[in-house]
Length: 295
Ligand code: NAP
Image (tube, rainbow, N blue to C red):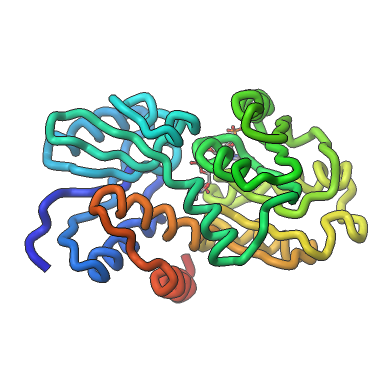
């Protein structure tokens, strides 16, 4: 490969767990593109300043992870239609003239992992989406685009879920509420888009039990159904509590967000470099890497 032509980075807080630099290195090797990609820990109140500095020092593209996706949306001069709709940005094109284009590749990455890599049909299914943060915003419209029978958003802060559902009402059969609200049952797909697992403890699982069972400590037979699929957008150790819980409920398919992570990264790579890398081998290698490193 020739010399790297520009700097790329992922911004977040925390960021030490991020595998994005590892993934983009694999993509760079695979496509022969020169690339310098790093992880940058931005202070909670200092993301805008960190991004300004990065762009001024030659940054040409950035991924954005929690908790900055909604702030990244506000810091863009221009947005793609899907980013505009999401109200959250995970991919920035940093132009030479100092302006920024924002995109959101989370939704297409998740839908691709669910439908292509895991071979799941979403049409006519009932989906429970836990969380109403930046990731939930990014995946909502693409999920509704698959024509589920219903999609209910449950969030610790009920107002955020209600607002998100109201914004998406024209796109499909969507509802929202707090974790204590009991929507119609059962669900075919439960997506954990909260960051609760990153903090270590997962009190949200008690909420999910309560939400699905009406506060019974264990699930009555058949409530989630033998075909239920449980998917955590988080990956590595952060996904373990939710995935263990899901296995305990007898979920047919249980998956962490490794595939989504690689797929959304491939979309970002394509936006920056004009070529979409192959993902299957990278997903398998990343799963091995995470298993070996326990994280
Ligand atoms: P975010 O914008 O900070 O939102 C966090 C969400 O989690 C909010 O809905 C928040 O509820 C909820 N939450 C946090 N702690 C909680 C707790 N203890 N109990 C219940 N709910 C809690 O984060 P994000 O960007 O949406 O990311 C969410 C998750 O998705 C993270 O694990 C992230 O790693 C993962 N993700 C993965 C991929 C991938 O490619 N695999 C892509 C994007 C995101 P409140 O509104 O009440 O605060």
